[in-house]
Length: 331
Image 1 (tube, rainbow, N blue to C red):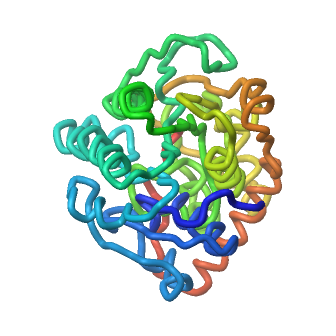
Image 2 (image 1 turned 180 degrees about the horizontal axis):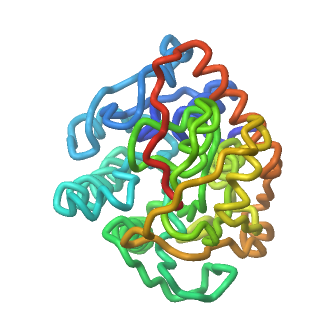
């Protein structure tokens, strides 16, 4: 993809999605600056790129770091956040300081440094538990967690900063992103990373709920592609797009696919009650995204799972003491 920008800032660039995006930007010969406090990201994710990027270990609550990092940037990809729903429930004040105030800081840094555009990582969580399927961008948001409120608030800030200050923005509502580098060591990890780790260690997974809840799983490289398209598109003002596949899979079926990949078909899941804030069913309507953003996924669920499991298998063979993902989630 030919970039229409020369320099980019990636907040959260040492994280799971952010590091893949940084890698794509560097490969495309874009100058890249990363801000990450390493609370959930890892230096290892960007270590092969360290001599080709500028890295600031800092927090998006630190205005001075953001101002410096945004100098001469054409676009900011804003991914830094407290990303776990349960963590925002457990620690609502600190989470709001990071996700709300931190995001305003990013917009202010963009404004003061004359950055042309922000691509904001939002979430399908803004739709809440509205039973309407598929989820469309025109639905009225019904957030059911502090995390979802934070993401919706940031979308409004994106709109307001364009109306008041002319700062362009695109908000991408991610559905369930998976792929290599997703950390299974946290109890807040995504279900696929936890399932992968359990399968690699030949342990039964734990599923919250009955396993019939369904999700739209999108491979991380497709999410990177969506970010790059959003940075390059014409007339982006206030655009909001679903980033998923338009397909859904039940959690029980997901485990069957992963168990088959790993040769662990006989491992039966354990079940515990559903958790507060979890949504029963979710998948994306992709018509608007296809027509306006010109995005469609390149990877099927099966292809993504195969590549992801190979990465987890390699990681475990290199480090037998790696976490076993024992707190599997159905989110």
